[in-house]
Image (cartoon, rainbow, N blue to C red; front, side, top):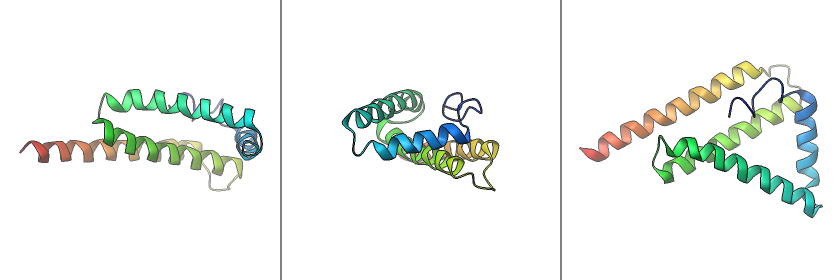
Length: 114
């Protein structure tokens, strides 16, 4: 995930703005909408594969949704050229979030087994 969505080679102001333009135009264009659905399904598959190795399926789906929202927010902030936007800080916050979700899942599984 970090190697693709958050790579400094991929996530630039220009690519983020292009992505937002593609998404905004997808509502009126069936072909663009199809491309967006394919990209989203691929992202879902890639992230869920990794999450399912670590979490029960239903919890993995919840964490995936949160990661997806997080990633979209990062791309929007980059596209808007926010003065306080930092790709490195965004990566660190995403990693911290996922680590916390894994800790919560671990605690819940211990509680369930006692």
